[in-house]
Amino acid sequence: MPNNIRPDDGPVAVTGSAGYIGSHLVLDLVRTGYQVRACVRDASNLANTAHLPAMNRIGPGTVTLHACDMTVPGAYDDVFAGCSAVFHAAAEMGNLQGSTPQKVYDGGLGATEMVIDSIRKAGSVKRLVYTSSFAAVGHPAPEGHVYTEDSWADMNQESRREGSEWNMATVARNREVAYAMTKVETERYVYDQGDKLGFEAFGVCPCHVIGPLLSASHQRPWAWQTRIGDMLEGYGHPRMFWNIVDVRDVAKAQRLMAECPVNRNGERYNLVATDESGLIPQQEVQAILRRLYPGIGIGGNYREGPSRRGPVAVLEKVVTQLGLKPHTAEEAIRDNADSLLAWGLVTTRPGEDNWQRDGNDLGIKSKWNPHMYPAIDPELRKKLEAETQEG
Image 1 (cartoon, rainbow, N blue to C red):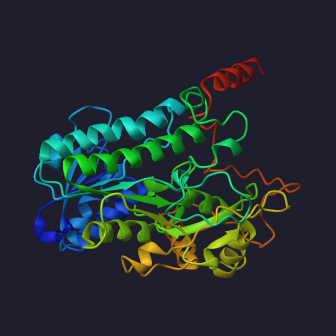
Image 2: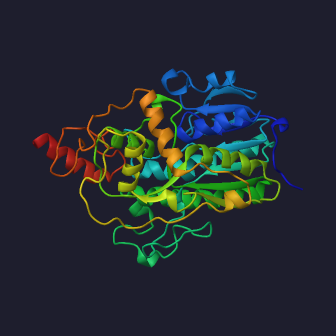
Image 3: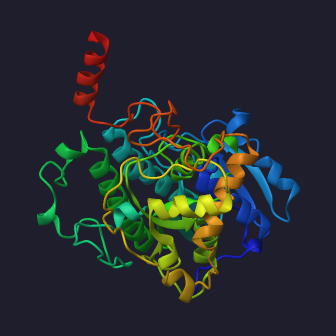
């Protein structure tokens, strides 16, 4: 018998509700009529959370805020009690001060083990939707390789570069390996626990997520929506190949997974570009922004050169199985930019050629990359900090 949920099955819980994806997920659930228990790190921090209770005025569903520290055992026990589904979007990304590669790893698998323990105690949860990452999908492969839901990041291990081997010694110093490993291991863990405990778990694997910001607090360092803001301000970044998915589609797809009557425990879903129009090098993102906002200096590639085509994947399963009608890449770029402008989070520069790149330093500072990345190799951090002090 299907374990899919409906709004009248009882409340649902969302971890990481104050985050970019989590906030859109709460909004989608409220608009669909769910009673949402929004789990946040600090419910008293209105700068990060005020937009969530404001969704009560949208309805027809409701939102209540709950302070839950995902690093504390039992933090979700009371919140999950009576819930029909849990949407686990909370994670340690590595982009906040004080983070380390080890904390990134522990914030995935270790934190999710406590989420599962609270689900077990609740006894009412029928479905768990886990926000994984395309980092759990992409594995070493030739340029242009097309990834699917059958792709796992621990495939082709023999092709990994020296220093990026999948083991705990690497986790302690390499954030990228720590993040990919914890996402893969956590996905497999929740599917295994679903079999053992009688609920169904699903994995969501988004790539470059952009779209409208619901709060000024969503302009965070090393988040793709913030990199769009840098481009609006005329900051040129290193070359990059984008695989664009709209944050609203990532949110809606998660609800559809929980409501679908035909999917089963262990199914995973890539949230990636709708089609080739969302698989584009950075200079094409720049061209779209120039067309949308003519006459201002839009940042592009800091230095021209070839871009490696990858990662390549397109939306399939969420469309064919769940019936998602996705936004276009241009809509995601436009609404991302519009929201940054509306929030007053970016300052544009007049003149199409008025942007910073190699040979044209305008003194623009990046908000996407404003300081040393927090979750770098701790030993390397010590060395760099020592050199800075000596200088």
